[in-house]
Length: 156
Image (cartoon, rainbow, N blue to C red; front, side, top):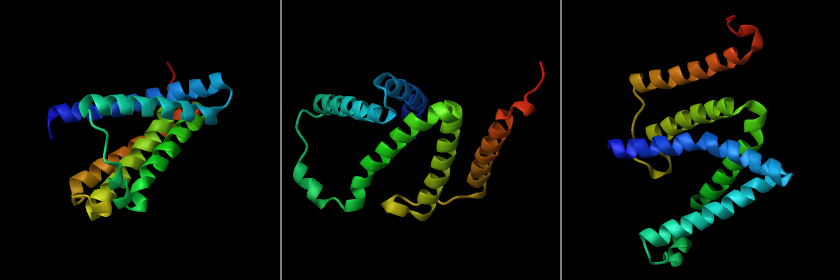
């Protein structure tokens, strides 16, 4: 793994809570939270087309879509569910709480996918050290939830 890819992944992840806040604000401005993802996806589609055509000035071979398995289309539904969830839940749970739950779940599910090679990914077995890291994330989630209770705040 190169540092460049690690930084790129960190930037992508770091922008997720900002997206949740901005989309919640957009939903409020529109008067309906469910409308914000529609606008987000129009902007995302437009940006994807521009970036795609700037990097590969040839349109994709859409005939290949017929070879895709039905489950391969689920990514769009998953992104839609995530964006709707972030838009609706971040204002209710708090951005930090929403992201904590989402990230911990992502790490756990990613580890299971890697360990068993689900969906055709390369197998990367969970070892004791990786399991310890995941357990520490779960413990961090629990601690942040305990810390959210007002009676647990530290007096200053």
